[in-house]
Amino acid sequence: MNSKNDYKRILTVQDISCVGQCSLTVALPILSACGVETGVIPSAVLSTHTAGFKGYTFRDLTSDMPAILEHWIREGIKFDGMYTGYLGSETQVDYCIEIAEKTLGEGALLVVDPAMADNGVLYKGFDSDFVQAMKKLVAKADIVLPNLTEACFLTGNDYRETYDIGYIRKVCADLIALGAKKVVLTGVGFEEGFTGVFVSDKTNEYYYKHEKLPGGCHGTGDVYASAFSGALMRGKTVEEAAKIAADYTVLCIKNTAGDASHWYGVKFEPVLGKLIAML
Ligand code: PXL
Image (tube, rainbow, N blue to C red):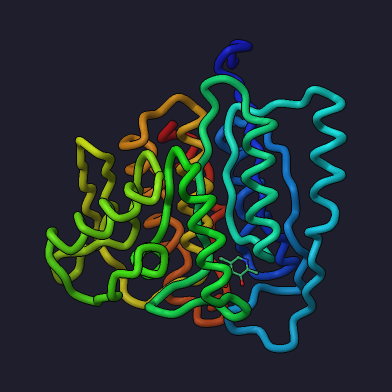
């Protein structure tokens, strides 16, 4: 049983893609499995995610956000952490900054996953104005959790498929220069067959290497960020949480590999027990 002090409450702000195993339909079950109370602000409702389905619906919920915040302020609602994912507009990014300022209690952590790009390109619907807005949220982050593509858009570095540690250090230093206190950069691989996560701040760095499975899987960034945030709320260090989230994401990909009909997401649910066992 958790004592009062280690039962934490996190807020996550991201969209609901009704089908597609990403964003809130991934974050809520994973955070709950981690034993963390989770409040949500849905940033938008989409019939599916935008990566591969055609003709999806998109209802922007930006205008609901100030009223939700005002109500929470009246009720004195506070969180021990906040984790932002896919946001539907630049205004939402600004609201997230205000929500963090007004609802995060003493010592609470802001985790920013700047979910907006992969494989060298921005997701559909995002442009350079959105990237500029996201930089302001990243500046407030205790931990920013980008993939290499997002890190390059945020810092103006060229996106590369192959690189050395000097390039990775430069990208991370540029993210720290934006204002983020710590960087957890995902999908960093220096050798054939391996990828990993590179964690750094102004003074320390840590690299966790793991196997790279063939073929990309949609939704792994959200699985990673959710497991990371859950582990962090359970008192793990950033480095421990980065490793646990990587190991869990690999298990999820292995559990999905070989099922071509499941191209749209990862089968993360059957291996939730293994995540719980890692905490
Ligand atoms: O997994 C990130 C994500 C979240 N939400 C929506 C998306 C994507 C990626 O494409 O389309 C709606």
